[in-house]
Length: 137
Image (cartoon, rainbow, N blue to C red; front, side, top):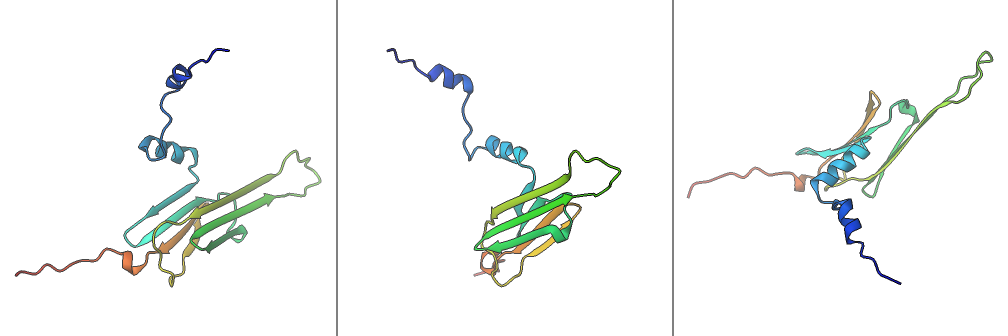
């Protein structure tokens, strides 16, 4: 039995991107563009695609630092004149560990507009930047 080196095969595949590489992070955002998480100076914001689902069919829960957005919609039409071959349905489920130190006393704000669910969390006071006074000696 002979042993064949995999080095030529692996080198032809190129370097597998690391999680910390900028190229890999852009690959992840293009592969899953239904979710946007960012932070501002005072807030952490999560935006999720829930297109086609009315607000009363969206369930948002936040527990132990994890945000879960679930949205389901099945469009059923009963029309004797139509023969249905398929029915429209939309289903979304996002489970996200929300980054940063959040204010435990502030209620997160959840709103849906144009098919996008936006959940906004206030940051804790102790992590907000503080302006220092400069004095002369």
